[in-house]
Amino acid sequence: MSQNEQKINLWKILLPVSIGVSVSIYLIATNLNFEALHSVHFSQKLIIGLLLAALTVVSRDAAFMYKIRLSSGNFLSWRKTFQTITMWEFGTCITPKISVTPFVLYLFFKSGMSSGKSVAVLMLNGFFDNLAFVVVFGVLYLFLGNQILTLSPHCADLDGHVIMQGIRSFADYAWIGYMLILSACVFLGTALFILPHATKKLFHQLAEIKFLERFKSKIIFIGDEIELTAKEFKNKPFSFWVKMSIATLINWVSRYLLAVSLFYAFAVTDFSFLTALSRQYVLWIFTSIPSTPGASGVAELSFIALNCEFMPVGLSAAIALVWRLYSYYLYLILGMIVLPRWAKQISAK
Image (tube, rainbow, N blue to C red; front, side, top):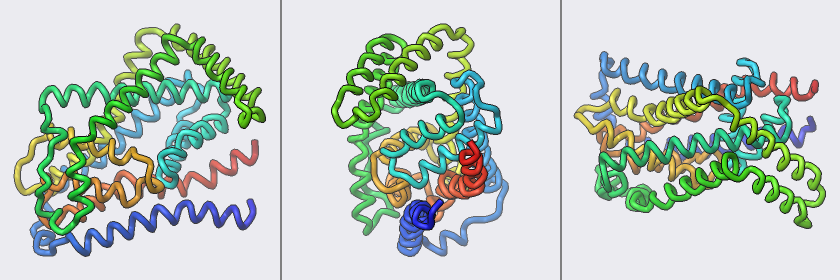
């Protein structure tokens, strides 16, 4: 690897970290109330909340590993699966949302899967991920109604923060993101389970586009393998679909329960568990919008904007930082530990 490539890779890591750290410092400087901080006591409730938060991370990643291994037909060993999801999360941390899919396909391909199988496995997991979001969000909406989307712009920790007040006021437009996720779910389900042959033809047609000619043979091959893999999925036993559904549900609900566990750890008053959980679905829509690498800055601002009523006044910035430690910086650290060994294995191949 050349020195230029090393510099580029280093900047890919430093850029999102510097954005996230800068926003966190700004939020702490402007939001943190030291009197409120003194009110946080080393209590049983605090310990339980933080342990539950750690448990959500473990259960999330365990379910993630299981469903990737299951959907690949146990092609990957548990060690390879751990490496793959760690690099997947690491890539999510250092790249904009729009760049994650090609990176994940690259991870699968370098793990030994064929390009077509890599696309099919990613499509299957994408379908289940989107389906889990659509179903659970729909169930929560049945219980809570417009309370999920219609938020009061007034919240103590938002005073003087125009951007966060704006984010909160846009929450009632989150249904647009919901419809996009629903559309993606329908498209992936149709491509894999209803019209795999038409999907193959679509890839063949893409291969004829002039600026894609250099990749023509690969695109055609991917289309062919998607159809073959789709037929393989159709022959899977009922137990396979049950296991995928449960693993996906655990994976995503655990992701959202992280924030709720932190609210429980630091809360001084009771809050609605369902309302807090549903708000994480709205937050996910905001952080899924293509923005900075790893949604750095955007994630911290959106977290406080959409969840400020669940957190003690003056502590929202501190809690947001703890949330990012569990959900973002942890994977940066793990990624930097796994990356050298993974890169060495790839170079050897």
